[in-house]
Length: 468
Ligand code: GDP
Image 1 (tube, rainbow, N blue to C red):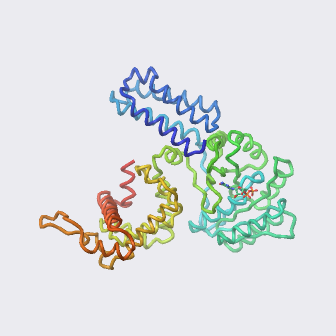
Image 2: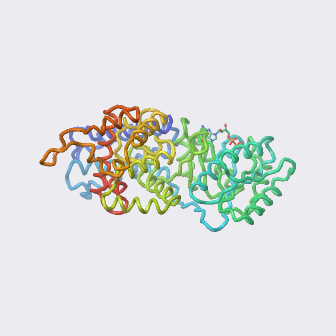
Image 3: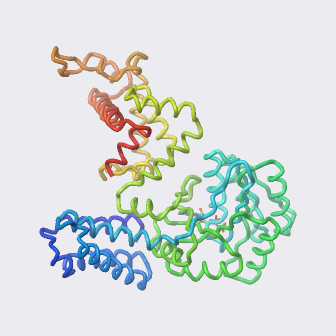
């Protein structure tokens, strides 16, 4: 079962709680509703290959928590509170299932952070190294890759091609056969050139062989990584635990990236198995493209899985954008704070969102967004956004800088009575319909009102946080 399916099933189980007619103490404490709910949750987890023992523990812990909370009067005798107690207990235990309770290393700017990637062949190591470099590069770290994989023919070519495509600096050799020497040379060169993030891609093997482990240790000694990351393929499910242990015994790694989470049935199993090894997962690989890398943190992950959005992720994303253009974002924050967002400013926000990555990813971070808005492919979504840009392109400067009021006809008492000729002109000019222009103006007003009401520093972001 792919993660989206797991999320849907868990979500459906939790919503069934809202449909249950009466939830009094007896029903909850007699476990009728809770038992049925937990049965569904556990079945979904087992289908996703989560270890039976972990699932059984989750069941016990949720029951104990709910019992303690209700007996302790946390629900204050109210039905809705009782539902919340159950939902919170399940949410917390799901978080616990994927939380190793260990903080990973965080690269710091202005110093060289060496990250060494290890893992079996085919797990997605080389692909992930480039994704990582792109991730940090986008966030203002000068990033590069050292290809120390001399075992697989063509490894350096693969790095060269993907690094060139991603516009990331790289180092490797067609002639040198000693991976330790290449790694040391590459890291020394990039350190001298003051790169912030230096990613060392090491060889893999088909199996966990002593040769592989020996090589990893030697490279580690030569480049002294700040963090060693193990790259693990989600498709092995629960077996991830054994693989992680085997690697940990020789190359003591600090973090894990689970790849191929897109479309793999055993994703949930792999993540929970890894958490059981007390090693933090830092990213999930979710596709073959350069940007298909999701930052992983337990709570936002479960929140997103359950369709509850990921405000933290969204804020981080916005902050990343802000670091790329701080002055502009400061100006925007001020306008939001003052409730003076013009159509032109809004267009800029739409353009920013379009630059943030695949739309579905951004949309799934926004809490409260109706699921049907997420429907359709990313292409359809970005086409919709492009049409919004075309519409604004057909507006005059005065219209763009306005709050949209001049598109409306107003009665004397200040109530809108209809649309002005401007709407039809914009529709004609942009090759869209009057309806589309009207929709855009409507959406703009909703967004501007929301920002105004929220006030405060984060404007519409804090509005969304309040919606959660
Ligand atoms: P390496 O041998 O560990 O360096 O593995 P590669 O980086 O060459 O990747 C092996 C295959 O897995 C390639 O076809 C990649 O495109 C694919 N791959 C890597 N990461 C992901 C991912 O997150 N999702 C999917 N669907 N494929 C991936």
